[in-house]
Length: 328
Image: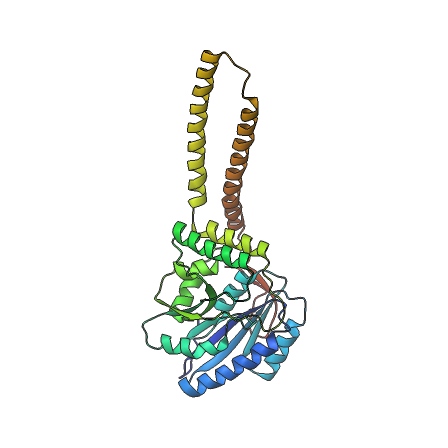
């Protein structure tokens, strides 16, 4: 990766966008103000890199207008919706800055925190400043409860260091960004990757901020599938659990057979207990299907990795010498 050859540090802000036409004007106004403030205080330069993840509203038109008015603006537009993980990877791969920030366009990642984050990195004690929400104001109670359970679970069963309330919003040094890009897996879970690569990270707490406009793209079902992606990407614990369950059921079945044989010889009742037998068959059958499903998740990931398909396809950009498909 070629670093911007200037006397002043360059900060690249990577902003994944999916149907954010309502929020983008607010974000653009705020990030410009923060950039101007930081340029005066710290003598830094900015590059704004927007990644349009196959939006079907006017998001791309807004990005074109931003780029026409400000030469610091660069954008990548995908041929379809590849997901936020692909958008983050594409942004990191094209970022030229000495420091790279990842943030959402809905203002839930306040740009006003960037000066403090940069100041912390300048001490050279950390390679990353990450943000975490200390409150979940405005979120449904069930979603907040499930999120807390997920963070506790994944930290216990994996090597990923994910703090409760962690956001994707963070500012990183070039060395950490290059380490993240070295992980070329197809099934990506950025929160886990950020923690897995290590590096000294300062967690910056802040109060939860609700979307400035538009609607969230993350339904409860999508968040549930995303959590499964994270667990299977950074832990083999589900496979171990299914193996343990199989051993326990075999032991229970062996003891149950002994009990049936003894009961039949003593009481002479060979046909009694068929309802419990039916329940046991259904229970064991359910456990088997559950374990096969776990195995299938890991096999599916292996299958997708072996295909070596591009993580994303760019159909439009204002950057020069851009290939149509990014194949890693």
